Length: 94
Figure (cartoon, rainbow, N blue to C red):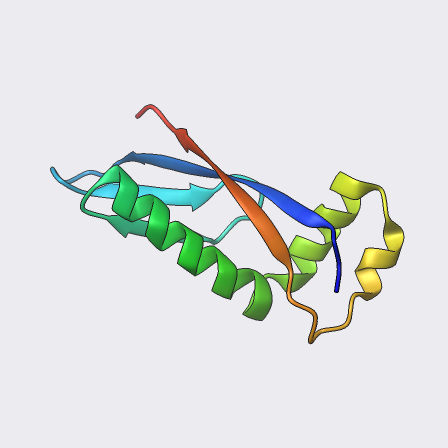
């Protein structure tokens, strides 16, 4: 199992409607979530990110991890090996 951890930033901001917060991953496009509170949006973003980097965004996640760790061998990480990540929360202004 890889000990390399992908570092991501979750940007959370108030949505267009009152009582809605929207989150997105800064480093990988196309990963979004929402919730009724900032915390709920963050938790939903954690779950969505875990699924998306394994199923749909794995090549982008591996490329980012390779650039973060300067380890080109990670590009050949077996598909069955789960990618670990940390998600730093950042409140974005509108």
